[in-house]
Length: 331
Image (cartoon, rainbow, N blue to C red; front, side):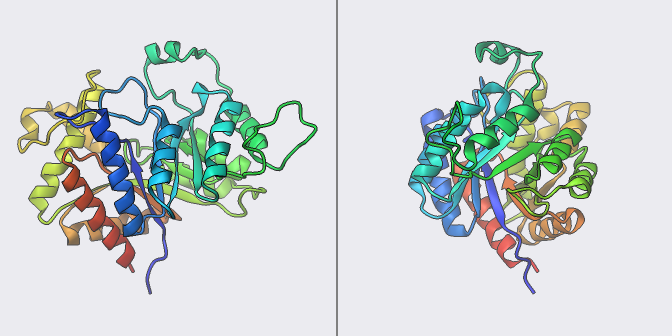
C-alpha cells in the first residue's frame, strides 16, 4: 500500500555566487514548471529582506509570477512575515492572487521579521510590538465571508477563504495554530529543536474551526539527492557554508560547494550547523528514500515540504526530481 502523503517544495529563490537576482527569479520559474510536472502539491516562497543570496523579498509578486507560469500546483507563502505588514494589506494582496488564480493560493504566516534590526527600522516596524495572534485573527476576518456592513473590507479578499497556515519553530506557533484551528507548518529544515514537542502540543490542543476540522501538520525536510553519496554530500556543502556565514553575521550569495568543508567552517560552528540542519535526507536514491521514510515514520506529518539550497541549478533540478520520484513511491 502506498503512502498518500502530499509533498511540496519550499524555494527561497536563491542567488548563487556568480549570478544575480534575475537569474534567481528565472531559475525559480523553471523549477516551478518542473515541480508541477513532477507531482509537487505546493510551491512556497519565503519573505526575507536585505539578503544578497535570496530574491524572494517581494514574496507576493513572485508568487504571482510562479502561479502564472504554472497551471495546477498550489502556490503560496512559506511565509509572509506578518509583523512586517498590516493585515489588511496582506488580505488584499492574497485576495487578489486568489481571485486571479482560484483555489491555488496558500498563505503561510510567520512571526519573525525576516531580517535584522536595520530591516525592522526600514520597514517602519515597532520592535517592541507583538500583536501576532490578534493580527492573524484580523486577517482571517478579511478573507472570510463577506461582511457588507463592516467598516473595513478587503476588496479583493473577502469570500476568497485563502487557506492560512501558521508557521513556526517553537511552541508559540503550535499553540496558536491549535487554538485557532489552523494548519501548522514547522520549520524543521533549519530549527528542529522543538519539533517533537511542538507537533505534540499542536495535535493535543487542536480545536476544530470553520477552517479545519482536524489537525494538519507539515514538516520541512532538506533534500540533497544525487547519483552518488559523494556528489550529494558535495551539493549539501553549499547550504552548510551559507548557514555558517549567516550565523557568523556574514550573509552573502549562495556559496559554491566545497569538497573540504572542514577547511571552511571551524569545528564548533560545523557542529552547530549540522545540528540545525539535521532534518535532512542526503545521498543517492536509496539513501534518500531510507532517510525520508524514517523521518516520515518518526514524525507522522500530514504533509512534507522539501527544500535544499544547491548552487548549481541543474543539480538542484535533479535533486528535486529524484526526491519527487522517491516520495511518489514510498510505501
